[in-house]
Structure formats: structure tokens, C-alpha cells
Length: 244
Length: 298
Image 1 (cartoon, rainbow over the protein chains, first blue to last red):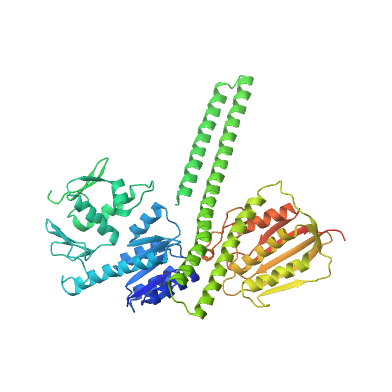
Image 2 (cartoon, rainbow over the protein chains, first blue to last red):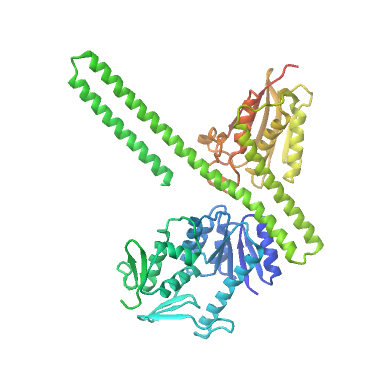
């Protein structure tokens, strides 16, 4: 059983989601605006395992809730639900720290599958931390990539530089890193990242990716302003170089 | 500064600079042609026209930028208002389809879906009516309408729709069948309903609405809807009747809507030879809407 927080101001949708999550055997709590959601989450009386977050909320919107939560060092998986499904909005959600998104109206079965996906990832990474690296029974073979004293652990969704504290990654950051590593040494275009990593095909300002790269550089580079591993390829995009 | 404010600031600055340049040119022209009357007069008139043109152009540009922004807000609001009830109905239908729902819950779900269908219907109606009232050539069936019973009926329906007591929406009307106007019954019902729905919507949890129908002068009829709700900032009292416009105030951000309701009210009031106006002491002090229509001589 997992504890899930539903942040949704539309009473009907919130109740319908709660009914379904309870039917799936979870515990579900509803918060009807951003402020009360943050109170519940940052108050930490009862930690949640996942959040269903609507974007258009009265007062603080979903983007603000997600970024405040991440800024406070909370990495609860977030699934964003939004009636606005333009690529810009989706990217904005990922930038704010969402792990996944679903446009409204959504398919119930897909929503449940996505929630379970997020919970599964949380379980792998959680057990990783608890057991000092021992994988959970249902986790895939350890998915780790090491280079120049850095360890990217895709299963646990974290980056470790030498022996310093690990940085937690969102699902989106994880997917982007994995794609860059897969194409190590070759330049990848911004458009390819949008299409192949995030499945966005719309004509969207491809510069939106740059913010993600800036964040990844902060995690893995010694001097993010003059990057060695995540290089910019002028006019094309980016290149990951494990051994500069 | 938002993108709109930046754009406006840019064009206003540009206009000021160009006007300053034109004024400098006029001064130069006057100095050069000080003794020749014809080119002097001709030059001054031309430069004055250029300056006037610049100002008119900038004013239109700024208005257009503002309209564009209202339009964007409208698209966002309508997207939300259309997609939310659809998302809700789909969610409940898929729940019913994929799970064993007990009878009590099942009935509850039907109620919720009906309410969603009504909300969707209401939004679609508002959009269609706003479109229709933009067309001037509309042929209206005009007939004498007794306003007091019409308002009473709207009030009764509003109480049912919003689950409110008789106290929450009080009606003051003298039903002596003398408050007759010439108009379209459906349109007039829309006007009163929109005003009532707004009064309830912007009252939050404490709904205290007073509705009155009266004749302030022998040849006019008033329908007045007064609430104790969130109120309207004074500067925006006129703009609220514009199409797509929604009040910019913190307390109101929570209330959802398309920005069409009052536009429809104003269009219908105008097409009936009347007018509508709003009064408010500002945010937090409630608002009063008055619909004024010409009275039909009995």
C-alpha cells in the first residue's frame, strides 16, 4: 500500500481519482490547492509516496508547487495532470521537477499504470538506499554508469561525484542523461533530444532543453561554467564526453 | 514585468521618441522658414499630422496588445472549462466500466456526471451566445414581457441550481404586472441568470444576494442584483463588460469562468435599448449590477 497525495481543485476529478486509487489498494489524500498541498508535504507528518498534481490550481499553481518541493529537497515522484498539453507546458512541468505528465482528459488505465510506474521506481531506489546498494527483488539488473570518478545510477536515479553526497535526479533528468551516455562522443541535436527522450514532436522552442543541461552540469561538472563532460556543440546541440 | 507590459513600454517609448524627433524638426523648420508664410504653415500642419498619426497608431497598438492578452486568457479559460467536465465524465465512465461499483456509489457517480454535463452545456451555451450577440443582424422576436415573474422564476431556478435557501437569494418585487418591457424572453432570462450566477459565484461561502425589480422612473424598469461578495476594484468597473475580460484581483483568481457572461449581458441590454452598469466600493465590499430597460407603456 502506498500513500498518494492528489492535488486537484476540481472536486469531481479529485473524488474520482481518490476512489480509483483506494480501489487499487492505496491510501489517498486530497488537497484542493497548492498552499495546503505544500503544508501537507513540507509538514512531513505523514510522508507521501507519490503526488498527482494538477497544474491550474487557485493561488499557487502546479509548477510552483513542484519547484518549491524540489527546492526544499523533497524528491517524491510527481505526476502532473494538465488540461494544457502544449509542448511548452510539458517542458515547463519537467523543469519544475515533475517526473511524468498526463494531459486531461486522460485514460484511467494509463493513469493507474503511470502511477504504478512511479511507485515502482521509488521502491527500487528506496531499497537501494536502505540496503546500501542491494537491489530490490523486482528491480532490473543494476543500471549504473561510471566515468571519471562519477557514478550515474539510473536505477536509484542519482548522481554521485567521488565520495560526495548523491544528487537525486528526476525521471526526466535521468532519461536525458541516459540518452547522452548512450550517444557518448557523438553530438546530439536538441530536436533529437525532444523527440527521442521526451516524445515531443511539436514545433517547440528547443532552447528549453538548455535549462536541463545547465542543471545536469551542476551535478557532474567540477566547474559548470566551463564544462568538460557535457559540451556544447555550436549550432547542433550537445555532446557527452566521458574522458575529455 | 510581463511580456505584455514590456511590449507596451517599448511601443510607448518609441512613440515618445518619434514625437520628440518630429517636434525638433518642427522647431528647425520654423527657424529656417521664419519669414516665409506658405512653407511655414504647410510645414507646421504636416508635422502636426505626423505627430497625431504617431499617437493614434500607438494607442491602437496598445489597445490591440491588451485585446490579444484578453483573448489568450479566454482561450486558456475555455480550454479549462471544456476539458475539465469531459475529463471528469470520462474518469467516472471508465471507473464504472472497469470496476464493480456498488449501487449507492453508482447513483452518486451518475449525479456527478450529470452535473458535469450541465457545466459543459453551460460553457458551450455561453460561447454560442457570445458569438451570436456579436452579429448585429440578429432577428429577435420582440413581445411584451412581464419582468417581475420572469425574475422570480430565474431566482427560483438559481436557488435550486446552487442549492441555496430562500434567505441566500432574497427577492424584492411587486408583482402587480406593471413592469412590462418589450423584448425576447429567452435573452432576458439569460441576462438575469448570468447576473445571478455571478453574484453567487463571487460570494464564496457566504451568499447573501438581494434581487429587486422596480421602476425608478415612469418609463424605465430596473433589475438590480446586489451581493456581499469579493467586490470589484473601481478602475475595472467598466472593463468587466468587455468580451473575454476577467477581473485582475487576488481574491478572484480562484473563481473560474470564461469572461463571456457580462459581455453577453451588455450585448442583450443594448439590443433591448437599455444598459447595464456595475457599482462596487472596491475589493471585499460586494457589488451591485443594475439592468435598466425602457418600460413599455401599459
